[in-house]
Length: 307
Image (cartoon, rainbow, N blue to C red; front, side):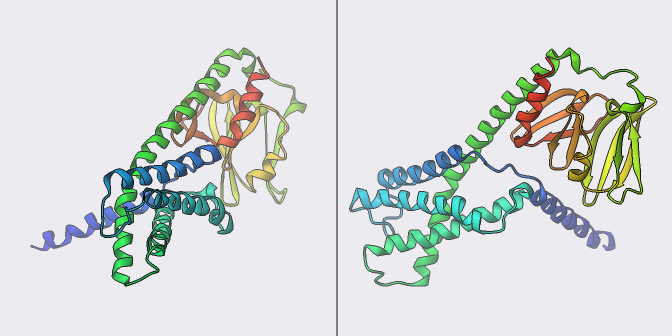
């Protein structure tokens, strides 16, 4: 009996921990303005067609006029456009730190906004007669039900589109890496070509051959430097920011690829892609390095410049 009474606790903690980990997981943000407009237009068009032809919830929506019915779709597109192109600029939102949890909260914000304005639009035609909070929450429930289908469809389409786009970029970068023979590191460079990386207070530093550098990873106010020494992987921790250390490096083949990573392009072994972006497998490390979208062109240009 005593053992049984304690078993639900860890399981519950495990479920809560898994959910928190899921909510903190990075989530891709649609930065392509044209695609965002297409998705917003799709949601409005779907709602308009759905209401016009199926006429669900006749006790709530006004289906006497097809143009009034189509107006619900217009309201949906307009509110989504305001939320994603205006409100998102006003609020202190950092898309670089976007997660699944934040995406869920933003979706709930969309649902609440749509509930309010669909309710307002629906009552404009009867001058808000017989207004009750019960009707308002009923419209909110209907809005949620109607939003599920287009959100699911658009999420699947978006996921597939991002996957195809990133796989195409990965294929192009992989082809460039395979075709560039001159990217192999220089053996035994002169001593005066050594790279010295200083900590922020200048009291610590690391002096290595640039070609021995593998990658740098930032964490808060520290940067971990991974490099080769006598064919062994080594790690040096310096107190600094990745931006300040990047300014010390002039070798063109050592490139920023992510807000948290700086990479020696000689180290690229294989390029892969998924819906969240590109990922790099390295020659001398098992670490998988992510590539942010804004750095892809610069990395490709540097690789192809060495053809």
